[in-house]
Every structure is written in C-alpha cells, then in structure tokens.
Length: 174
Picture 1 (cartoon, helix red, strand yellow):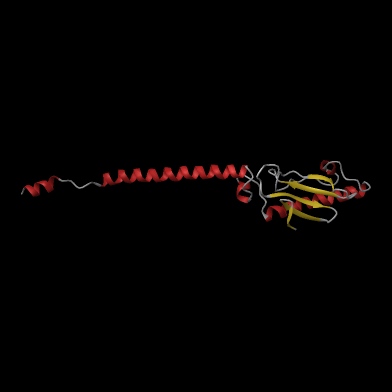
Picture 2 (cartoon, helix red, strand yellow):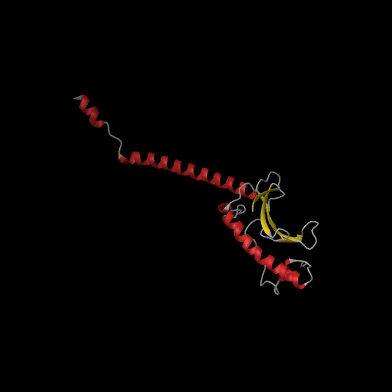
C-alpha cells in the first residue's frame, strides 16, 4: 500500500511543462537563424560594395554591379543609339567628334540613356593613334580598387565597329 500512495503522489509532467521547454527551444532556433542570416547578409553586402560580387541579384539589391549577359546586351543597345548619333554628328561636322555627349542632345538624340552596367556613365574619346576614330565605353566603378577581379569595362570602338567586354586586360566576349 505505501507503494500505491507513493505512485499516486508522483505526478506526471503536464503539457504545460513540455510547451515551455519547446518555446525556449523554438526561440533559441529562431534567434540563431536570424543572427546567422543577418551576418550572412552583412557579409554579402560588404562583398558587393567591395566589388567582389557582380551579378544581377547583388545589383538589384544595390550591393554591386550587374555584368550579366542580359545587362551587357541592353547596355550595348543603348550605346548603339549613341554611336549612331555620334556618326551622324561627325558626318555633319567634317569628321570631328562632339566635345561631350551632351552636344548630341537634342539635335541628334532626345536624351543620353544611362548604361545598365558599371558606373552607368558613358565615356567618349579618341581611339589611340587612329585619326578620326573614337571609343564609347562604360567602366566598372570598382576598376581601381585593389583586389578587384571582374569585368573592367565595356567598349565600342569605331575602328572595328564592335563592342567588347574586357576583364583583366583580356578580351572576354565579343
């Protein structure tokens, strides 16, 4: 009989005891996931700002540059309109290049469309020692940062009449 009394006095844990331990475990897991995620995003953002990550996702989030094939093609299409305006300008001005791209607006272009890749700023200049030839390019905003490894610039040159993408001083794709 004393055994039965002892068993009767021994209470089984209630569901409330289990819930409080599960709540603690769940809170711990959620906090851990949140902190690891925050650290991952911070590292991803730092890498993007340092120019170590260049892709459509990082560019869309404002962390890096978009040098995807689609972005390069869209930039080339926008640049081709500028190239046509430059050639039209040169035809009307005895082969002379415009002093700036702004000289093309509004007579030859309604506006200068920004590039999708890199700094999003066009650069126009004479092409080396080739008289009456020019280049139109856009470069990476990270090109001068130590340790940057990626696409350096996209360039059109009037001598070859084509666009080229350069990475570490070598031709990447045509």
